[in-house]
Length: 252
Image (tube, rainbow, N blue to C red; front, side):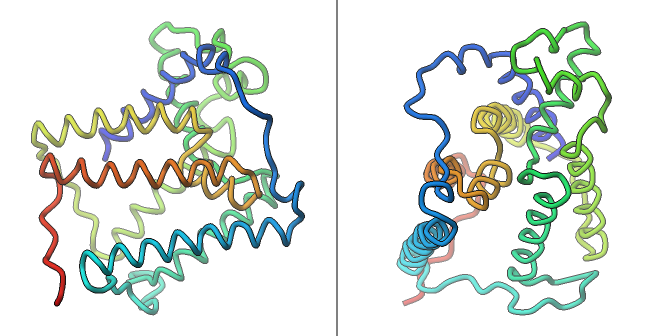
């Protein structure tokens, strides 16, 4: 995961270097807001219908493949050591997203902070990212003012340390230091692809998907469609290269 993060950062700053090319491609339409076009209630109904259809289709596929659904922890055990229910996690994510709107005045983001770290890192080696189009204007100060220059980078540090604390409290903090050549290769390639793609998509499943959906932006729906398709392809690819154990046969 450390390798993935390092090359995610590299892929993110690489995408900002190529920004002029991607920005020159034709756009079909400016931003679309479901809230603006259909109102809060109409946007909520459209989002709920889309997510409900995706849930229903996923259930059908899972049951056809394995006979039943995997059972998550129904309730939270210890609030400090877990196990934590999926509903607790969902409520926590919703609360953080709401607080981001209130405190920062924008949706929750993650990957932009990694791009900032990447730009600051390449600057140490003599590059001048502040002369690139992407880092002009208001983003320039985020590169020049250090790792804690904006709320996103501070939250990223909180996510990393918070996850390590949670794993430690649950007795699951067990770093693995021995990596195979395949582990390294998949971490490097996967990290670069995720970092580059996240910058072009204006975020990951937090900034682009969760942020887009909760703010009624159509780009959140568009990200969901292609993110779901990409995940499907990724699961198949993981099986082909032997990253996952064979699933248990379906229950008769």
